Amino acid sequence: MPELANLSNAQHSAETVNGRAVFEARGITKTYGMGEVEVHALRGVDLELYEGELVVLLGPSGSGKSTLLNILGGLDAPTTGDVHYLDHDLTQYDDDALTRYRREHVGFVFQFYNLIPSLTARENVALVTDIAEHPMRPEEALELVGLGERLDHFPAQLSGGEQQRVAIARAIAKRPDVLLCDEPTGALDAKTGILVLEAIERVNQELGTTTAVITHNAVIAQMADRVISLSDGRIAHTDINAVKAAARDLAW
Image (cartoon, rainbow, N blue to C red; front, side, top):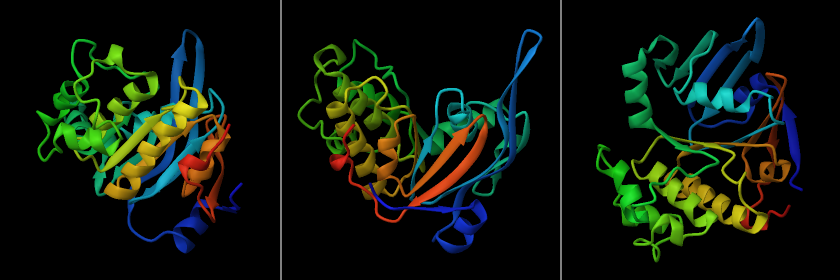
């Protein structure tokens, strides 16, 4: 397993990061009402994500990972705290502004692929490229995730891993600044999951896309620049991989 160095967020900012912070979150809380019960999903999270890095958010179910990712992606708003994307304060945005932010800057990949069954791989990706300002061609995006030979196949003709890679191609075809992935291998076996992780790794390395991957699988953390571990709505610790593993070398 690659060597990990544990640093506080402040130490990380001062000592180990080159480049600007894409996200800065301060004092993020999120509370949901469940009848008369309050559920505290996040409890005062401070976080930075830096340009071009690949970060894994690691933790068990209920630790706050997905809530945090949804707030960064503009799908949800914190109860308290501030979230900045570059020089934009997302917590001051209304619904229309958040929609523009998501459309112009963020690509999402979820555990379930959400492909349209009646459209081919190429057509599913074209749904995004038709509305993006400076998109890739669908063929280019699919080639990047290793599906250049499957352009005209329908989802039912693709394996689960291939469908997930179409979803990644769809997410990156608009050339987002940030790629947010929520359990992208959660529904896949290890061999297929590694193919998906290789596609994410390639996007991060070749396009320089700032990438955050949520997982409960500690093995995946080996491919990250930084590993942010969450527990009970808080950041428990942040680790830096002194040596990153290639996705193809992971095994679980």
